[in-house]
Length: 192
Image (cartoon, rainbow, N blue to C red; front, side, top):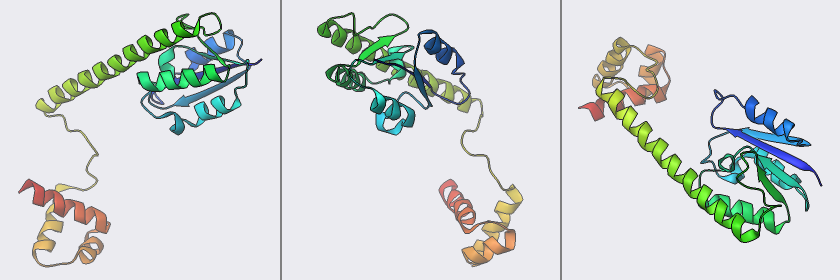
């Protein structure tokens, strides 16, 4: 009967140390973790997959909060139910869930409510992000990849193309890839 820990942060900029330390303090024998968004499917989280594969009957999976498993109510329910069926206990360090100490019906209710809350929080985050992006765009902030060519290079590409030059010839002449030449020409066509 081993105690496994799993942590997750959404980006590499987020520090996972707080979660890892709390899992060590909780007595976890093995700790797994992913730096990946909560919306990423379970099968695409390599460390979570390793952790779930290693769990055996009687083991306990400890996570900081239930939303470390995901931001979808359905995925959370499926995952926790699968662990319960395998007789693996799930415990959160925020003390909201401990499947070893709760009846199965209560566990399902709690996971459903917490999963719903996580899903609503994700929708709220997406809405606030979109609103912030719109405000920034109205102020003139540009999003997306930075241009890797100058306006003069773009003008040269467009002039050569209007003179009938092929993509390969243009790319060699200006020192770009054919794909970049194509993007410049397509962007100009869309702008017109």
